[in-house]
Length: 160
Image: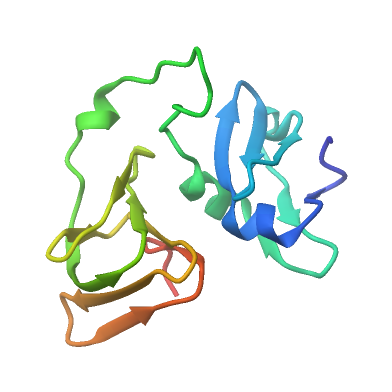
């Protein structure tokens, strides 16, 4: 599927909100939680990438899509990714994992995904993702506790 105007239509909400995003050349490959694959052809070929949207009105801005890209290419045979970003400084620590139940992961600014456990640091540019009934409580560098429960992904580096 090619983007139409400034929107690229994604066939279902699970692909958009729970899928893993991969760059394959100029295409965007989304792998859903059930293994379904959907490709947005030519997504990265323009200077102005499209907003991803579903028929029910949910959307992801191009900046969020960039943050959601996964560099773990184990699901894409024959691809090797390496470079200085893979071992670069992870950035500013903004908190730590207080409690965790189920599967919760963090993707760093280089796109490397790591499974989280109690006491792990959380960095400003991490994207956190809970799966199924995953639950995460963060102790932030500022006073406060942020409980995350439903399946979701949160890019932390976006200013509110």
